[in-house]
Length: 418
Image (cartoon, rainbow, N blue to C red; front, side):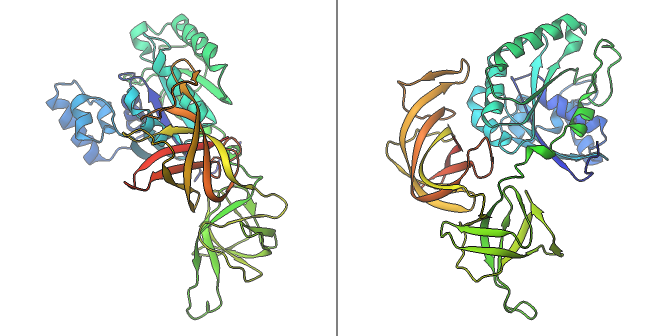
């Protein structure tokens, strides 16, 4: 299998507090030689001050001062590293219940989720919650890392038991690809290098798995969607008549000559050129940022969407969605919000809370209709004008939105369209 050397893999880490997420990422960065000397020096000094023998790998990701002092992850810490095979962006998300919203934020763009389980504790409520969120956000690949194998004498039976526990509850969820790995982040077993302590495990170590996981087919290449962000009119020599529609391809593939329709107006035209800052292209696909020109002069502005004429989303004003409430204050009944969907902004209202989900048991609660921080619920939304939407499971870009409180301008919720 050939891999594009520039291909970017985004992955998120999740697990209970003290399961070793930050240590695992520190080990990945350290063993793959992705740490700058000044970072290494700063972390070495902090480790010495705390009385640790050697380098405390967890400190490489704990960016906030509070986190370093408490030894826990509060915010979503993003880390970037690269190997000869791939580029990576890691979102290290918190394990505490009160930071569910941070996990939703960090995981929303991920190709893969690393879910850590402490080998001594097995599957716990936090594990189920994090797996449920990964399933809800339709993260295509889940890698279950059974960590701290050194503390259970590298026992194959303990590992097999945890796999059985995990498979029992995950069978109810929608996750396409689940893999299991026994590791010791502290000692480096099966992280970058294969473990000598677990000859019974024949699989590849974690870094090899991340480098070779197939993500090209995760993108929707069928439904061509191009939300317009701005109109380019350079008005300078050589570009006097240039009128380009700039934005990021959400999904699908566009080529010059394609028959396209502009929504919501319904005007049709053909793609004339596809341009970038450097050059003109023969085709554009997600997630490329481009400028597109059309054969006809059509009134197009920010928030419109260019789609293939023979494959159009349905403009809808009322729809159902799964919503994660992000704000400290609860949702107000019949309150007006601004909905941001791709580059489109409209006014919206939560018409009804259908049910809330207890993400520890997966049970539906149809009695309690108040949305509080970290709640996940099925809701009905109504907007002032139609949005060009797809189902989230078909298209993570055109199937997602955020709600903004008009009074405080805070982002209060993230939603996935059903």
